[in-house]
Length: 349
Ligand code: NDP
Image (tube, rainbow, N blue to C red):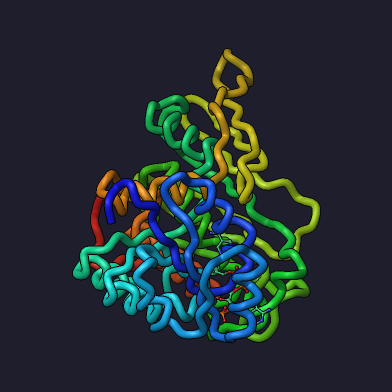
């Protein structure tokens, strides 16, 4: 592949997120295009390819990975399938952008990172929120000391799961369903990114409020404690129809209020409040589609320029936090977050 050749992306999974966000994002880049899709069902693969203008449709992973036009795979199957598909892609030398959560266990996520490293392929985790210009602005302001030392964060990420997505997320524990692996895992990544700090301990309570069945939860509230002492509270749900989303950081010298920012769209605003200065709307710059941003950085990383927006290690860390939240819900206890020892110590790239 030369830098003049567009990167060929193969989609593993004929998913909603690929259709609604990632296919347009890949097509928006001058240097990449979707060349193939794989679904476990032949007819679905064919129809999906036709609907989305994708040249080739496969019903086996091996066939997609054998396609010489595929340089990169985007994995957006149910969460239980991410690990095996990533390992297979790494074995065939394909770069991998994988959806969150990376896997269902830390051992599996660690194996994915190690396999991609050994194969010399790029691995990214598709945590979209850190790509938002609003969250990048929050991170910069916190790092610049605009609010002094961060003391507390409040994350409002309670939404209503659209009916078309009310499938495995609320019915299938084995597929990796439930609000914690779906939404809390994104909070974990965004918190690490904005604060530049790591979670050491969590506590949480969850409930079923009408959508989730069996062992799965559709709402959770919790508190995370960070290494530097910051406490973050989070409310994540599939069941709240009318709430606004938000992300507030309260520090010794001021507060940041980000409204309508826990979303897939490039929207929302950031307000800075400081002693004596009142409220000031922060100029966050030009919003860019979160997924376009992700693909742009991923393509560059594949060409040897920089890193994906969120790395495999970032995916391990957000998963470690989400699994600790789930354990706290199960046991009713405070749970320390266990990170695999091999992961990079530098937090929140
Ligand atoms: P979907 O339910 O749309 O797709 C997941 C899998 O389910 C597909 O790979 C497909 O399997 C199968 N499937 C989908 N529709 C049908 C159908 N009608 N009949 C039979 N099988 C079907 O999942 P999502 O797009 O909602 O999520 C996929 C992944 O992306 C998850 O890991 C999720 O956590 C993540 N995600 C990330 C987001 C982000 O912003 N970062 C947002 C939304 C999801 P196959 O084609 O392989 O046979």
